[in-house]
Length: 363
Image 1 (cartoon, rainbow, N blue to C red):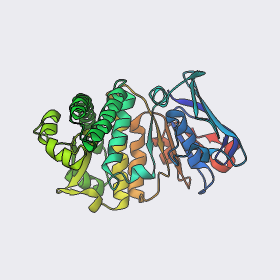
Image 2: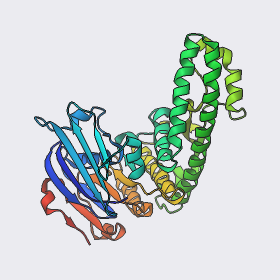
Image 3: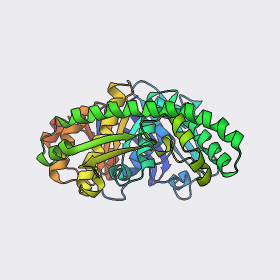
């Protein structure tokens, strides 16, 4: 679903604002603190039921107000409504029917690229697993069931190890193996599809530095245990060790995606700007895989697109964005778009945060 209109009330710095979007490309610019990230945050709320800025949703309610409300209308005539009252749980609705956050995300999926995403190579394996799992939850209706079954079995197995309940260890190990094997296979399949997309995209890049990095890059999926063994075999091999450590030491909860140059992690080799560009390219490849392979059409959010990118990397990115194909929302402090770039980003609609009433479409 592409977003046609958003109405925001009592959210962050906004008393009330209504915006109408292009079905393709939407650019929001303005000074730091003006509210451009808050618009993107409101859009993200309508896809996930949460903020990408804070885990405390009450912080999004304007001072001296009791609640915030966000509503979007899509081009195919669906409505999403988010209501958060200060002393109540968040209310999520799809076409006036209550929804869970997973139902919301599957109805209107999104891909987020923000400061955390830009530094994904320096982040933990947990974060890299998280962005992979979010894609799978959008593309596979059974994945969330297997995912939560696995994590429940992991928690219970660790408790059984801690309290030396041997019968419970065996019971939870069986569920751990079954659900863990399923999610690992799905993760690996999505990873392989994304990897193909990534290197296919790379063929269209022109910057020599980018091409040198791509040509020397190795991307590996580590499933969380030794590849020559099944998950069942690994649990049996590690049984004594797990009991001593009172923790499950191998499994999908240890999975990671590794980005290497000459066997070294790229976070030790590339500059911050180079890492940001590679992070964006990888996440856009995941985004494109969702669309082309799984038939899922997420809208794309990129916050502070220009930060830490030099002009060569930035121009490569702008040339690359139209290839993603889905609705795009992105922000920057400045408005760098000239006629040349307008030709690249068709149907670009620009919004100056301080002058929303004067927002106009660039044709």
